[in-house]
Image 1 (tube, rainbow, N blue to C red):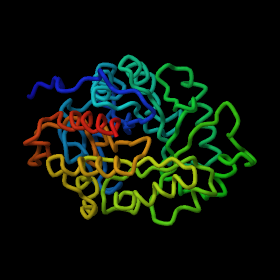
Image 2: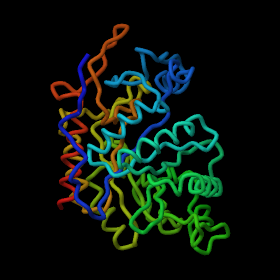
Image 3: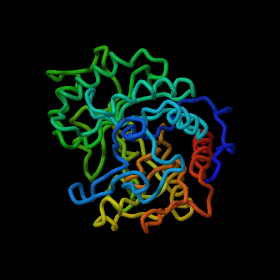
Image 4: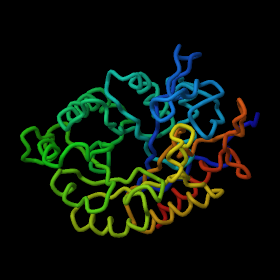
Length: 347
């Protein structure tokens, strides 16, 4: 087994300024040894067919260098936060499925470790069952009441928290406007729970949605360049120009590659080879070129979709050989993230 020291990166010396680097962090992993159950290392195929049991046989095309882990394990989370800080990432955004979801149990552990590492923590609100703008407002109130005074809670330079809303298009613009417009009947604006709310731009011609809904900006999340309009960097200059004209934040998302063929065999059309780091480099170059204030990384550890920058190791089980980063080192993407985060701050 390789010994991972991650000694090529440090968190010291990061330049100050308003530019920020975010990263999506998945706190949905559990193990029988730590939690008494397996979550997300085991996984269905296509959401319904016979899947992967966990252990050595997981729902991912890569295998983590740390092995199966629990995101409630303080030792693991502390190691993650040190990696994240060393990579020049300012804040992580947790996958959030509601206060009663099993992932909520990891949040105190993450805040504690992030605070010690100098990393801020925000929330990426997912499309849980029954989600609508009113329930999102309730989520935000709960999050701020519970975590808003924690030193590690992320607030922008305006002093407001920032929330990503995944698949925001699932609710109509006029429904969001009731919460996100100042004159909405259930508005969150000019209350103690006001914030910066970032919706997901997927298809072309979504300008009316973002104008009418009241979102403060938009992000692209997906990092398969061939998947949707928003994930293709060739469209980013036009998106940024529109954002600047209309007073919106544009947060382009970068990633090292994409593969989810173990859990979605039919989705190979969206697979994007990492090309020994060149794919990641190109995304970063394209993002920096449009001069945003914030760049987000998809992802630290979304192993199912192969977008992780967390170290992966060579591994084989039951006749299946997992992908890995060779000839690059296991921590290559952490080191490279540090390089690009520094480049971003210099521009």
